[in-house]
Every structure is written in structure tokens, then in C-alpha cells.
Length: 340
Image (cartoon, rainbow, N blue to C red; front, side, top):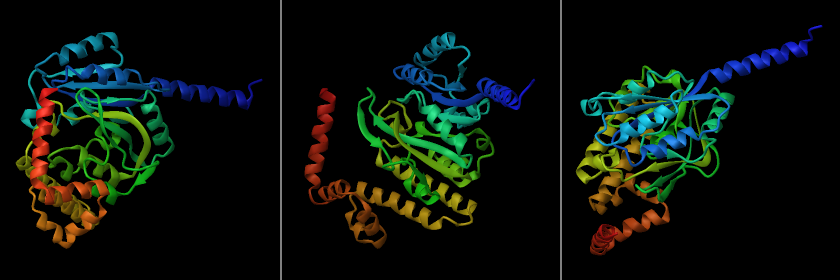
């Protein structure tokens, strides 16, 4: 006689089988001239221990070094897991959105982001994020703590926006900027990837407006665990090229203000105060970089200075009252780095 408990067990096994055959996560990996780093990134993807299937979507943007060759070696070893695109000409230089180009072929329910010079630290990273998102369908972005590392993987500083797990508000996301979360900690539902709004499309970089867009669509949840390493100082990276001089930083800030103006219109000025605060924070940083310390007397900048930690305040005051000592220190530091 067929019992109800048997029927329930059979249905449970059926659902489990469907789940195992379904791709749950698509890893979006964009790479260009990352021959010294791409293997570490790929190994960190492959080491993931999950109860579900996932795929690794790699887009090599016509690298001129051995990056593509290394990817091909991994593709041969893991043909069911690694799905690469090898471009013959660089599309980023032609203003093609290579992120969308890579994710439009995704089959996973969620997209996890990690560029070819970054890597993950925890083999349970994907599992932990999927577990949360599956249990909280209102969550449209799941992130976690990370370390910023240098080119050889040495830890520089943490990216830890909260001590303890936390749900971030839209205002906190806007004011936090692109550095609030490390890009390679992001996981979000794939259905939100197409048809991104104009404020995203017109942005100078995509990580900051993407976080804002996802925050507008639901809940942003932060897991207070270090599960990724975000690398800085890589030759040809966005940070090294677009943040290499004060002139380029000012240009980037101007473009960010334009993006935030589009965001303001898109949201019917619902977050105008947060956007104004973020613009003031960016202008404050430029004033300090230009050594225009008289700006600290303005009320809008006084409020920002008060919110800084002791370490940041001390640095600014040293720059203000001992400028020559700071310049000498920078020269010695640069000389020491060249000698290493």
C-alpha cells in the first residue's frame, strides 16, 4: 500500500534532483591581461563546495599576455564548469558593456561577480550567500566582508562596512559609495540584470550604480565574514588608470555627480538628501587632496570632518599644519618601494 509519507519522500527527492540539475549561480568573471592572477581566481571558483550546480562565465577581452592560454588549460580540465569567451579585439576600449555581454548568456538563478585579478577565500562563500537569498526572496543583493590586497596578495586593509551582519538602507548605500562593498562579494538575482535604468548606463563605472539599482529593488544584506580578496595596484586596472592623478579623480567625481543627478530624477528626488551628502563627501575629499583646508570652515564640510575617525582626522591635520613633512615622507616612501 502506497503511504502519504512515501509520496512526500518521493516528491522531496524529485525536487532535490531538479535542484541539483539546475544551475543556481553564474559566476561573472571579466578578465584582461591578468596572467599573474587568473589562475588564483579560477582556483577560488573551482574550490567552491555547494549543494547546487554553478557555472563560471569568463570573458577574456582580447588579452595580449598569457591570460587566454591559462583559461584554455582550465577549460580543458573543467569543460562542464568553465564557459569562456575569447575576444579577438578589445571591446572595453570601444565602450561595449562587456558585463552585460557576459551575463546575457547566464543560466543561473543568481549572478556572483569576481574579476580576473581578484579571488575568493572561503570555499563555502557561494553556499552561504545562496542559503540566505533562498530563505529571503526579498533580498536583491547579498555581500560580505573582504580584504583589499596588493599585487602579491598581501593584506592592505579590510572592507568591513559593519561589525556584525546587517541590512543596509538605500541611503547608506548611496552615501557609502563604490567602496562600501568589495565588488567581488556581490551576488544578486539574474532577473534583475536586463533592462537596467539610465542612471546605471550613463555611469563612469558600473559597480556603484549597480549596488544602488539593486538596493532600490529590494533588500541589501551584508554577511560579516571575510570571504574574498579584492586586489589593488594591478597594472592597467581601473584604479591604476582612472585614479592615477588628481585630474582624473576630479573627472571621475564630476561623472559620479552626473550619475547621481540621473538617479535623483529616476527616484523622483526621494533620496535627494543622501545624494547631496554623497556629493559633499566627494567634494570634501578633493578639497583635502588639493590642500584647500579653508574648505573645512564651511558648514557642509565641518559635518563631514566631525564624522571621521581619529586616524582620518589626524592625517588631515598633519597635512594642513605640516605639509613639507608629508611631502618628504611621500618621497622617502616612494624611494623605498623602488628599492624593494
